[in-house]
Image (cartoon, rainbow, N blue to C red; front, side):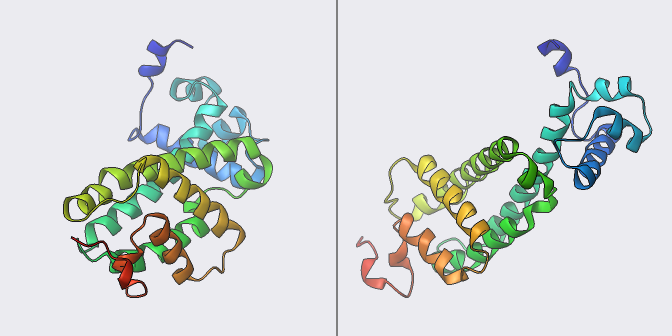
Length: 207
């Protein structure tokens, strides 16, 4: 399939394309990502296989769309958190982002659980994409606001956030009962902003 043809495919917002994505999600929940077929999805939506291929190049493209929708959910919740935070209230931001991150990891934004149980490679790709987008979003928004008022005490900013988010995501998945305070302290110490918390006021940078 050529790039030119792919560029002409209907994109998000097209009702029938969205119906295919939702059908793919539903069938994935029932059968698992590794077992679904184009025929399964076409039957669920009530369309022909040829019409499916009008919207997606192959099965992998439809599965990717399901994962992209889940990532959009993560970003949407971060956007809401970012809009509601008080600029300059570092501890308040940490207090709210720690439980938010735990909840996002726990929910998976309704990503079919069969993704994590039946396809390690596919799930690995999803993790990379979600961490990449979340890290870039934070760097473009929250970090910019912080740097405008405070000293940024980390190098390789994007890489640091990528590593922090990936590490927390994997840790929370295996330790879902980790206290919010622990997550908060991990974030603060990794980013060298623990001096802005009540626990370590002596570590606050001197202006």
